[in-house]
Length: 110
Image 1 (cartoon, one colour):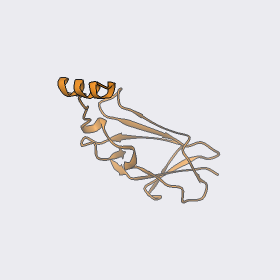
Image 2 (tube, one colour; image 1 turned 45 degrees about the vertical axis):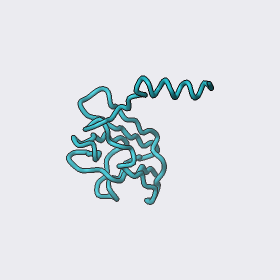
Image 3 (cartoon, helix red, strand yellow; image 1 turned 90 degrees about the vertical axis):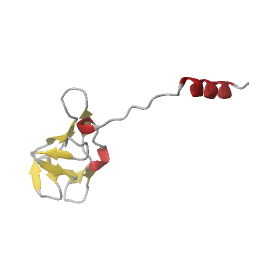
Image 4 (cartoon, one colour; image 1 turned 60 degrees about the vertical axis):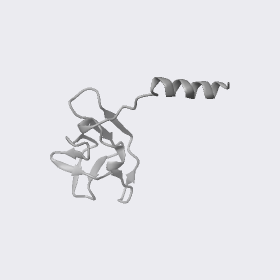
């Protein structure tokens, strides 16, 4: 009996590996925010990290670096400084900032 066959047989007998399903505000997907590069001075974010362990909901922190760095929100519908923290909503379907659903962010500096 091959080792692979034995492993598959064993997994079948003990029920396999349980998958962990993430639900709610700890589970927003990264692609819910598109990072654009269309404006003047646009470039990649310096960092993009997500904390799913500290608070009640996941918090994603994006940092933009460079001279006079800023972050444009939802196709220039708002601008913040060089750092933004967005929070996963209760359903786990959107990242929000100050009550607004964030779908696009752009890092720019001049």
